[in-house]
Image 1: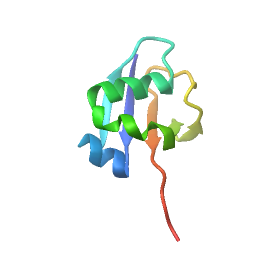
Image 2: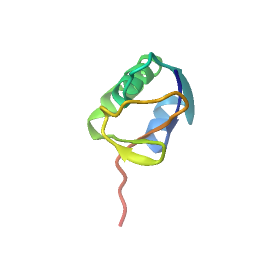
Image 3: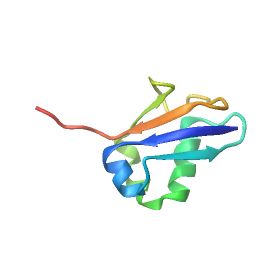
Length: 81
């Protein structure tokens, strides 16, 4: 299956891309997508502990199963005032 991954802010800067298309085996999760992304962009690895994930524009736990065509977004922490 193929999923689209979008990266924002510091993740985009570290990877050097705003989005990626990943080919994953059926039954893969958002965590599997993250692992594959880190394989392609190792600079992302240290950021995992502070991330949130969203699947198809809804926050989702990393164990959420993905479907072909899903959009996965990894969201770094943000600060504001």
